Length: 427
Ligand SMILES: *Cc1c(COP(=O)(O)O)cnc(C)c1O
Image (tube, protein in one colour):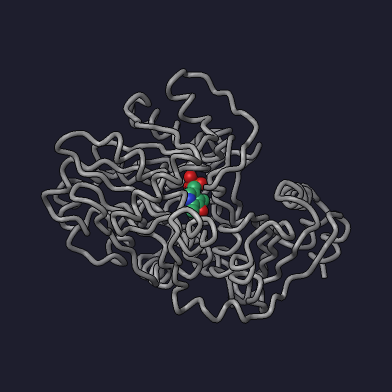
């Protein structure tokens, strides 16, 4: 199947090309040309499969003509090499816990699948540089996903002093093909340096650049798979009136969930859950698209006022002739996040700010007879200081991560000066 550019419907590329290219002309997003659908009996059979076989089945419906089934299975096996669980929080609400990967956030699924696909697609004499800016989660997931891959060099910029020490130790201590640069500036400064690099023709003649950010279609497709796994883990009687609440920033995660529904997964309704960066909820209630300046919140990975995956979500609704008024939504403030984390803690469930937003809305909007699932997008330990202060209980660092604290930081330091970054990249 081909993928087309949402800004130029005449631009059609293969999946491989879309992954290598990232964006189409005019910064347009790629979107699948066909929207495959499984029959009810297909879906029932798939519920009996293991996660890897089922995920191969799902992804091959989109990219089977481009990537051989066995190769795809190998990529998926290497990418999804950690578990995920549905954990009940109350009799009618459960959390889909997506945070047991190497960097403790759901971004591991998409980043690792993209890394495996790229590594498979590059021939032995091809080299690629992944250049990305991060305020934490993305950089860590990308660094771990590409670590040790011979054909790919990774360069990650982050704002010096603006991410937690645990975050920094998690991805700035790897070495090998992973270079991390602490920039004297904020996240926007880092992003603008990355942008300059992608616009620099001279640089692009010397090295092959890719961004690995959440607009890459491989990341989106990978995320469809865990929605199927969630349903497979639920007992039969809880599958029929399912409502899923997704903590959203750039809306990649929610778009993947809706694509799972378009494949035939039985989901009654989705809820787009945001913090007070509420461009989408305001749009859904008024029909007016008016992004406000981005505000810092406790759920900082969702501090986005111009969600970059939104055009894909709209395209999906258009293609399926679905109505946007059927999409649930809601906004949760920092005060309510704090209250919600305490409420969950009293139920003996420790969560973190992003996931708590999704819980709040599923809890408040669930109707009689429905079963609610909210996505757990990060492990609470990633937000240790915030969570401990709010729930007044200490959190335990998972054993696997204890040794990171002792590791030596390997970051380079750089003034926010593009000529310095250029010199570093061509070195
Ligand atoms: C990235 C992220 C989100 C938002 O996901 P989108 O796909 O951008 O909507 C939510 N929670 C956490 C912890 C994240 O890292």
